[in-house]
Image (cartoon, rainbow, N blue to C red; front, side, top):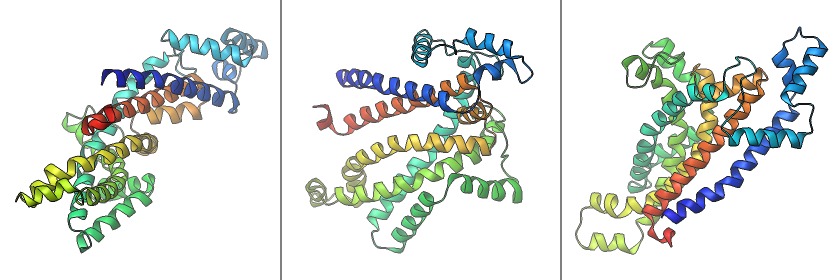
Length: 312
């Protein structure tokens, strides 16, 4: 197990390097001059040229990229061109709310999706099965911004139960929980559909296997057969799917945080790109990549725990 984790970490290094290169080149081709952003619109050409030289922007792109990698290796992501705060400080202040939003959305949506998929498989062909699949297709098809706006109109405006602007505090406080409810509900709704559909297909396949028939022949109850002998094996592809969907959730978090004014990483990335704050934008790209790599590593570990054949 330890060797597998080490191998995965080693393989993650070129992936992270590729993301850093892509993010750096992306910032090179987007419109806007970083020196002009730092100097301000009223700065003279001499001041802008001096800042450009100070930032190393007058050097070749490869030299700039190597200097960028060296700074990251020393834990220096630079300073924000807008607020002049350290990028690490900006990222640290937004990472907590984003993790809170993503965990909050997965805590309720994954169990609900697994339960819906299992119920649909057990009641295959029934009206309940068709209703669950219809809801799953709807959840997959509807865009996150539409779901968010409908929930805001329904539970925030028409029936003002939950606040829908900003973050009132940590999730464990009453005000923080209420402000987290609608963003987490919106983000989780896009995850239920894929999880339910994958769970249904996987459970149907597992219930045909020999060990399940043997369990039934022993006289075990159908509930125990499904939960103890069917669902555990059926969860292996579901966990893989959840790991892949986390990347989609990160994209959804950008939209959700923007709509709900949630002070998270996605909202910071959008603001940095719109204001040409290149250093912060590069920092958010790197952090998103690290998050995706970490989640995939966790998925691989869970996969090997559920299926011992993967460890061989």
